[in-house]
Image 1 (cartoon, helix red, strand yellow):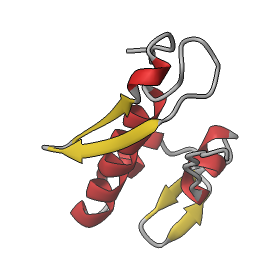
Image 2: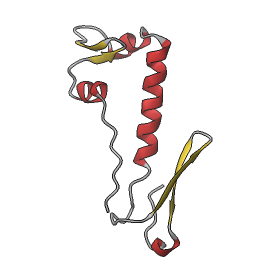
Image 3: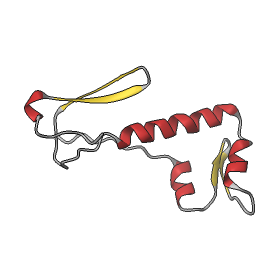
Length: 97
């Protein structure tokens, strides 16, 4: 059984391609506007979403195996931290920190 975590968002894909920015109401072209100036004008709820999305993206990046082989275990969360606890039988496969 393969377990995979994927994070996909319309704003991230759009912005990565340099096409514009995801504002609180949808996707829009930057035209001559500065990305960070437009982001600063967004409602606080949207900025909070963007910060939580960034936190999730960073937390997920630390779940990649250093050895590149499957491992078994469980994901635990608490105090705004996600942590992978590998099964003892997989001791030879450490996670990248």
